[in-house]
Length: 263
Image 1 (cartoon, one colour):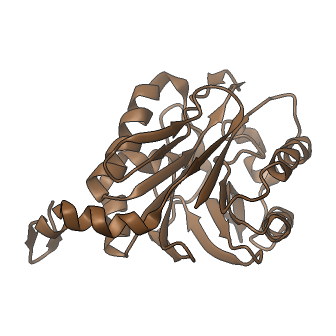
Image 2 (image 1 turned 120 degrees about the horizontal axis):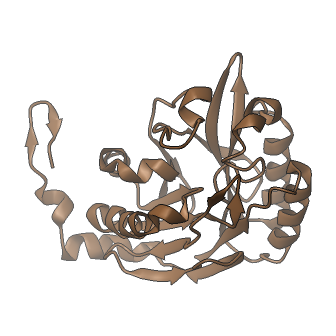
């Protein structure tokens, strides 16, 4: 399974449309990938909070239609990152996954909204449900940035059958060590492959951390994009997951009580 995580530099002097056009050119060079990832609210820019409402779109809007067509054109699964979704008078940080035919097979509204030096929690409404999607490769869990700090979400995805965890993000450089730790930990504790896609550059005065990663179920980082705008390329074999979980069956050793999982 060929993976491409497209780590994008967010430039404040770019418009949404200019950034989309630039990223499309980068996507065109990734033909042959089985799965491509994009970062969190990358088209608008995560920290451009004053543009959230203005640039929000409905689920059937231009952003979704455009990347539906792009997935079909490239014949790839495309985790097109997230965008500000408008539904009625509410707004969400919504990530979207398309299959090779351009069909929208997964949508996830970010459950944990960031409030530390961020207006996301003031403007947006939180999602309510973890999301795991069936694909030709296996079951894929969708998550977004700050979610990484909440292990119970990932364990809920494992309970739904997740084998591969995708993370779209705009994680700041100031907490890069946390990012590196959580990428490895979420993969290791859930015995899943994890692929993350972060932004780089300095936007609205915030330096972004980059370091998009591919992590295996043993918590080992197999590929890292570090701090440049680049396409992180890697190959993984999800068929090895069953063997790993049988060899070291920690998920079978979880302690339960009458109200649910406690470890």
